[in-house]
Image 1 (spheres, rainbow, N blue to C red):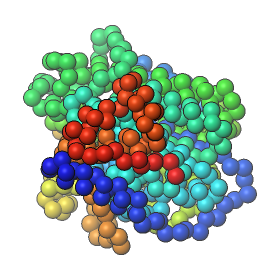
Image 2 (cartoon, rainbow, N blue to C red):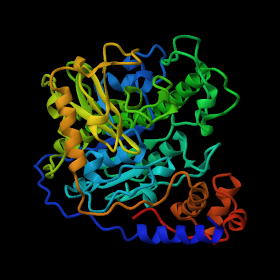
Image 3 (cartoon, one colour):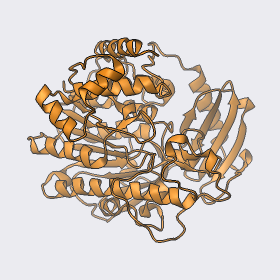
Image 4 (spheres, rainbow, N blue to C red):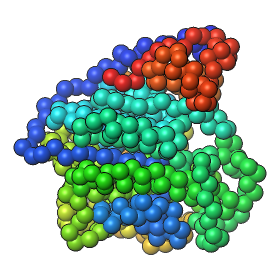
Length: 503
């Protein structure tokens, strides 16, 4: 792509994004109850089994451990898709990917979808979002739909690729400024990119040697993604240590935010959710330091903590073993906000489980589409995986059962070993997914492999997202937060636009 064509593509994208179709207007029924603040705090690529609250031997996340004392911890929570933007699209719509249409990075959530922020707006909530990665930029993903503020200024380029990000310290600082600015408690969404690769924590932490690596077998450095190859790391433990340091860094800043809330009555009054979009693979099934290649639990299982309003639980911390999904969060949050649920949701409210209802034999699902599709059904007992499915046909898949009680199993067991009815539930889900049709088109805004476009777009975007005049821009350039204008104009042959991200 030439510099001039990149400019045209960028400007077209900016104009098209501004004209996305709006969601259908849904009637909102609100019960007569005080409006509770809702905080949805997410950490990208965070494996549940690398947190001590899930049995990890290292204390990587003391702030989350403290929050867990006041919360319900879900032991078996899963993402519908181990990719960032499809996962958040499911969280924001309460639907699996076949229901909202965003299946791949670079696609945009269609405006015909109805989002959590829009539904809460009907109940008088103001929604603020603070994100930290290129894939969540509103003009590229459409995930800002319904938010009054979507703060996606991403000043730093990753070390090994043209993705842009904002470290936890800076994103949490933006949230703090919002709180200091007289924020009226509503819905606040936070996304931290740490510990997503490349693993390079701004504040490195050393861990004592121990059983850090959850992967076994030989480590083949040539299988490491190019963007993860940092600092001549020859050993698996080096990568695990760096990943855990990223978790520790993100947790420290989450802890600062939570402590700030505790200093007011906001912590006790709020419904606080902490989760992740997906996990991360460390070679357990042939995928190294990435996610999305398979639907095994290292990529699909996520942490989920929910602190209910009115302070700590009277009976102390609680744990739920039932399988739940990110698609369950929209109905759960609407339930506690007193907002009626729209029709057509795939998720279910977790309020019963949060308030003591015994877990059921329910299954939740994950999908991966591509040349060969994969499907997974997750239950309290384990995961049934249908993989290498040409054309998405489940009849051509390889079916394996992975028992949660045998987390170290690499090969799994025959599908017949799964609990009765699990295979039927997965076949039913696959049938519904393959038969689903959308009444709207799904746009692809970019391809992550197009590095020239991503870099060009993000430089343009950052200037507009900052909403800065020339003097303010120059001050940030001197601090290293933005590339100098002259450098960008030389590279891309264009003048910066003045897009504003606050609506």
